[in-house]
Length: 458
Image (cartoon, rainbow, N blue to C red; front, side, top):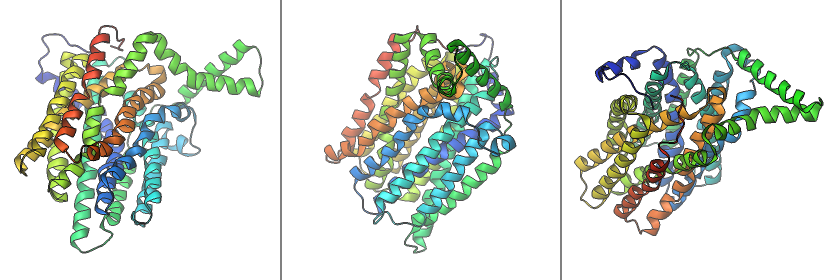
């Protein structure tokens, strides 16, 4: 765990956030978070207002499951170089730029179709956005970690906090723009008001690509040479050199190396326990998050209300408490931060039960949303710092993608049944939120069992 000398004042730790590289990490986080609101809140509310059921909307969220499997192609992203773009702007940035372009094209396609008659096509485009977004996340996270040197341990938790602030900034910014644009065009009497809002979101993607060009990236040739040297060593050990052996060597050094390294470093049982914990930790939060905008709409809040309380106020809260969460992780250690965040998530989920079982109240709505964002801020920064410290710097992209995608698997594959669970409960939102609060218990129990055996890069 990351610690400092006892004389280090808590207020002094804020200086880490003023390091110039934090601006670049903030932008990378925003690029990563922005697509989630496109295929999350925006898509869900678009389908809801076109008359589709909660169950259909919930299962449409299965497209998020792509994030759970991006580790499968992470090694390829680490090794394959984009012609022309890689030499011009760098290996990592070329992949991000390419995926951002795909997202932009998909938004323009969404602006031309009606989900009532083309639901399969709408979901298909959403799937392409999810694939592009999850692919860019591989390089975004690697580029973010590589902005901080191996000997700058104190900056890792601070960088994780800034990355989370950036992620939520991209997510909340997209939500505010999408909801307000949709309501604006709806008030103008435009029938396809959601389609028009996607054009506005496309402009944000263009701005992200411009900002990306100002982020410096380390020379990829050195890493490329190291990878090639590893291939040659494997070929030499096999004592045969033909096309089949060269392919085998490439696959071995690219795919199996990072996995073997992770299990060897932690031991098989502890490594497996770490993966199980990562899978389970944020499931309850995901169940709530998937249905939250539907819940707000059903209990009588307008799109502008949701934009104001859930997105605008939520963003301010998230920024403040993510930065505080980063300092808490630095001061108290990542493991303690994970325990605290888990308990906080469960507690705030219960506030939604009170909101569901009460009369419509803007005060309760604001309180529940703000405290939920506080919990999410602490949980996310602790989680990002935790897996950032687990990865070996020789396999940054692949190992981080593996760990992050396993965490995403729990939040996407299982949470896709959230709408069906609400329907099964006959719309009893209060009971639904109690269940989501209980979902964090297994992960915290598992963390308690392995906390003294986890090998962090501190």
